[in-house]
Length: 146
Image (cartoon, rainbow, N blue to C red; front, side):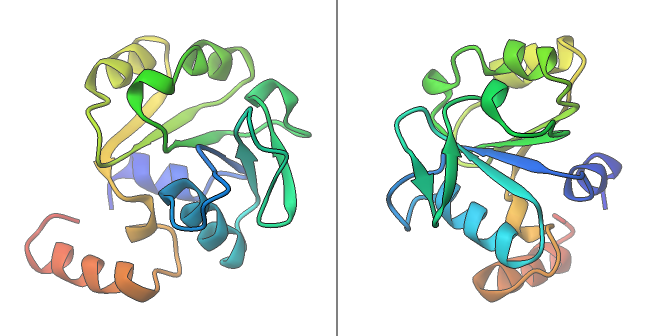
């Protein structure tokens, strides 16, 4: 496994930027999956008071403890000042969830000193991999894409 991915999934706590009131949006799905699998996670959405029964925070600066890693699951145009906020609050790693073109943001984050993962689905790597992601992981391994 790519060392950057390994460090991300083994971070102490992960903030999920892009949780939603919709259970079908990826940010909420990732939050729920990570929490179920024993990860310490914090939902971040300035328009949401709670996610999956837990407090949802408006920004990284409002989190109750520092996080090393942030999963970004919002459209690139909604990322705003997340990169500068992440660097101010000691975040070391950003994961831009596949499905959108985060290339410019990934470059900015790397230039700011953050370790960046793009164009991958976190749920293929965060153990234990279950459900449909287990099937996707099998095929990714089979075709050398993991």
